[in-house]
Length: 167
Image (tube, rainbow, N blue to C red; front, side):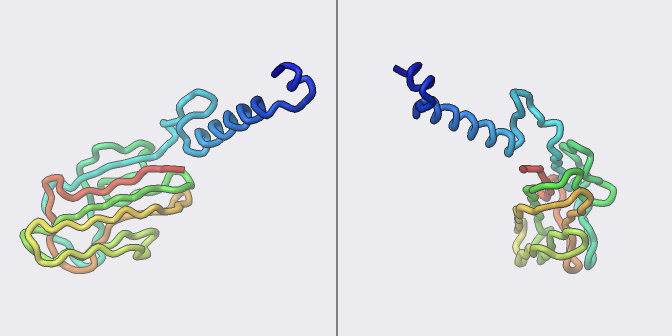
């Protein structure tokens, strides 16, 4: 009976199956996980860097996360502490900063020098603050973690910064 419905141009089961397959392919392409059965992970910029040493910062200093764990696409510079988007799209940014021995902590996520999101921690030993914004970045946009004042940041890989291209 299925063959007769196909010949007649009306087969709901086949149409549903084709539609489901198209939706699955569109989701895979949009997510960047697979294109026609081949992975394109190499085209997905991502980095993670931690802070090895404790830092003393003054106002508007960029935190230079100096221990790079991953830098796919080469967008992060440990010398400047700045991530430069190598591809236009949506990125998940993550930053966690730990205060040094009970100091106040006040930093912000910066995009092209503009404060997007503040992180504040009170005077608590080992106090950490985290932000995880999803940002639409154009190729060449710069994202960093910057200080709002003078204070010390805990290193020993307790403070970190990362980004990954998601779509």
